[in-house]
Image (cartoon, rainbow, N blue to C red):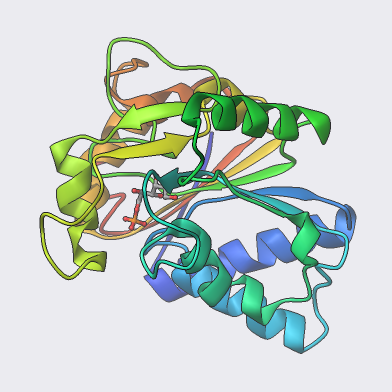
Length: 242
Ligand code: F6R
């Protein structure tokens, strides 16, 4: 894992945007895996700006959202599909048919997981996976547990994750209990992984990911077995990496 520590969230986001822009220039039909949440917000804004300036072209790019809450329709303001639409897709020249996300409203969620898994396989996997990290070291919604789950699956969200994400909802009890998430094998089979971590709330998780045991109790720790991970962190998140 390559670790680059940046002075600020802004610097980290700029470095991440340059990385993504260069990746798309190198492979214009890239398949991107996209995390939602607070950390990549500025990265997504910078990508939108770059697209408007003609510095990046998303017309052949395909994207897979990493996860989705079960029970939230795509037009619900807290659904990750909506999040990505407002924060990225509305600002870039991506084609609608190239945007993929798990359907948290599917009648048969097990079938939906299979469909998503097959869709990722059909494009040959992810070229560049953009990940955040949860305060409990989750990636996607792969929560700490006693085994790694390989493929897209249903997850019961931990209380820690629901609390961390409550800031996006009006009431603390509102975050759904269940989600669909891509699995660890799908993440690990990506050609490149960009892991972003910002703020003191991520210090412990980042230590577990980079210095702790490789264990499903800290899902991000498995990224150390991948040959092409770039971690972009700010000083606060990297405080314990030494
Ligand atoms: C969301 C996702 C999660 C987040 C993580 C960090 O699609 O994959 O793993 O990346 O929960 O969230 P923030 O960036 O809000 O701290």
